[in-house]
Every structure is written in structure tokens, then in C-alpha cells.
Length: 378
Image (cartoon, rainbow, N blue to C red):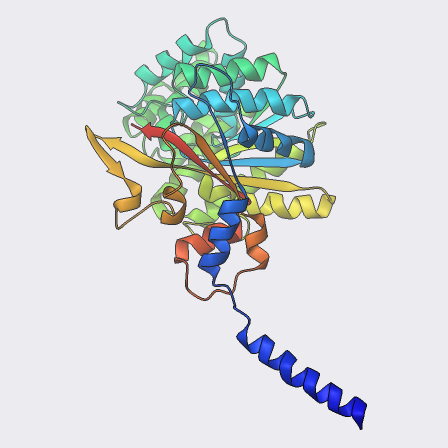
């Protein structure tokens, strides 16, 4: 009887304690996570990156088979930082650099990397391409050229897994046509001129006609990629684009002797699960699942900027209604430092109690780290 009374008392007070114990909201958990898992590093492009945050980023190459930087595009400063990352990754055996270009453009970038003056070549291609856009996506500046010299120095191979971008259709068709013998060029001069006259959506029959007389397998592939890509553009077919990216990636991967890969693509492509913008299972998820199959690891980093200069006007993403990045991370901006937050633990602790915004939940579900840049993007 005495033992039963003690048990009842324990249950009573234990139950009361359980009812009064504070349950943390997702917002409180995230704030605690940020406070405990934020680090910094300095980098302004003039000297190498220094700080604990950089040490953590470079350590990812030691711990993972695949490291993915979900970038914001066309940043010279980020291109410079990537050169240092490529050097660090090489020390852990990385020799594959996967970027958001087509296989054809990747091959062109490899060729340019071996040249005496990669920056001059990139600038010339940019000037000869579509006004203010160029021909090659995300490779046009002297800082981008620095990545190519780093590729050469540390014996990387560039993997281009994306579609043929529309801005490159004209360049690609020009390369194919002028690589042919004089006889073929004479026979197909009118075909070529017609293709270039409607370079943004070249006729499929004309592409096939030119392809039928070409012997070079890689140049045939350029015309095939243009055919596929022009339909992706016409239909805004994100699913087809994701399928193409995975196909191209596995083509490289299955023929590579080195299987450690450093990715630098737009952030939405590198999410775990369904991506952030187009609601498809993109290349990031495929590589994440590949790492599970290989019993290795995959780490992805969401890179972001808070400030953008548009036509001389400074735009603060934190204060816009159509914000591109979760505001909770924009608030961490430091004009002097890069801010790195490790959010891996959050996925297993979320209550989904709506104390965070939808875009914050999505980011926490799909990325391991958030990196906030101090730069102002132009």
C-alpha cells in the first residue's frame, strides 16, 4: 500500500512537471541554433579568406564526397572565393568542378583554361555575344577567368551538366559550321545563314540537315543540345531541364576515375528534395541520394546577398515584400564579414508551428549551411 501511494505521488507531480515544461517554438529553436552555430570569415578579394567560417567550409571537402555551393550568379567576388575553394578542395582529392553550363560550353572553358590569356578570351567572347549578356552563362569576367586558371593549375575537369543556354545558340552553331571542310560549308551556307537568322529558335529540320553531314560526334551533340534546349525554353519545361542535368551528370560521373565533385550552380538546383523554385527533384537531390547509395556524404551551402544595386538604387532584400531570401538570414548581414550558419540540426527539431515563414522552413529542410555575403551585388 505504501509503495502504491509513492507511485501515485510520482505520477501526479511528474505529470504536473510535464505540463508546465516550456515547449520551444521553431523561431526560438532557430534563434538558439544561430547563436550557437554561426561563424565568420574575412574576404574582400585582395587576400585569401581567413577565419573560422572559412575553416569550416574547407573542412567540408575532407568530410564529403560531394560539396555543393548554391550560388547567386555573376558575382566577381564569389568567383574569386571559388578559386580559393577549388585550391582547398584539391588537397582533399577533388578534381571535378561541376558548373551551370552545357557540356559543349564546359569543353570550351576547358580549352580556354589551357590558353595563355583566359581573361582576354572570355572578354572577347562576351563582347561578341548577346549585348550585355554574352555567350557563356556565368563566365565572362577576369575573376571568372581566374577560376579557369585554378582549374588548370590543380588539374580539374569542368563538368557542364545544364542545357545549352539560348544566348549560346549562335556561338554553338557558328562553331559547328566553321569546323567543317570547305565543301560542306559551301553546300550548307544557306542552311547555316537561315539557322543564324533565327538563332533564338532555330528550325529543327535545318539543324538535322546540318547534323546529317557532320562527322564529329561532339559537334553533333551541340546541335542535339540546341534542339532539346530550344523546346525547354519554348515550354518553360523545368522538369525536362532537371532530367537533362541528371543525365549529363551521370554521363560524366560514370566515365570519371575521380568521383569527388565540387558543384557551383544556382541555389535552387542544389536543394535536397524538391527544389526551391520550380518544384522538381533537381540535380541536388539526385546527388544527395547518390551519396546515400555510396554510403558517403553530401553537403550543400545556400549562398545569398542582402543588398543589390539596381540602376544606381540600393535594394535591401530584407525590406522588400517579394524578398528573395528568408529575412531571418538577411538580418545576420555584416558589411565587413561573411557569415556562415550551420543549420543541419534544425531539420530534426522543427515542429512546423508556423512561427517561421514558409521560405525559412523550405531552406532549413533543404540545405546544410547558409552563407551570407557582405558584398553589394551590381
